[in-house]
Amino acid sequence: MFIGALQMRSVAYIAFLLSAAFLVPAHTGAQTKSAPRTYTAAEFNAYQAAQAEQDPSKRARMFDDFISQFPKSALLIYVYPLCYETHFVLKNYPRVLACADELVQLGEDATSEARYKALYEASVAYNELNSDDPELAAKAQKRALAGANLLSSLKRPDMLDANEFEADKRRAAIYLDATAGRAAIAMKDYPAATNAFKAVIAVIDSAPVRPIGTRSGPAL
Image 1 (cartoon, helix red, strand yellow):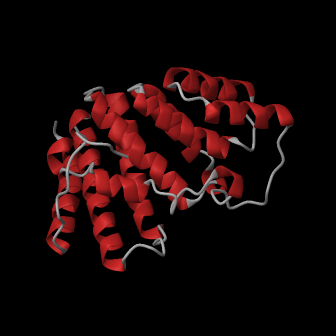
Image 2 (image 1 turned 90 degrees about the vertical axis):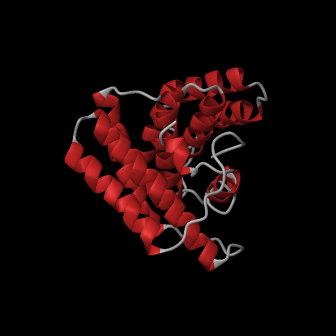
């Protein structure tokens, strides 16, 4: 597949980006910048039950039900990532996109890392769809560019070497810019596609980027 040829969706890279360094367990509240908010016992019990469910199909339904039943819940900051991760396992990519978009729409209530993770995951889901739908492409282009713009705001985890962190960000920039380029082609917006692929080339020329695997293994 087009994006797969870039070898950006690697085991090591994904393990880094989705590690606890970026998204600590929900009960710590580290994903949110705002003051702690309250939630009802019913919300908490529903969240806990969905989180504990081991069957991916049941787990996905439970998170979808939670979102429907508690659309204003303070726990959505934690539910949305679990929602899109679970639907990714099921290869339900439209729901991955929907849950990722919902998290991004939380704005500053979510950290830059949480929003970046959602945008990256949505970009991968878009590529997995392998669609030429212009409307879908327009949204994918917006997500990919937004994710690329967030890279500079990501904080380096203490356990990660600074040089490796910068290399990981360059790999991410290549993937996201290439995704934006692919989406632009689907939209027949060739000037935007040209700009996106020029951005890819610029990142590659800026420093060596070691290619490391594809989606064939466990991934982000």
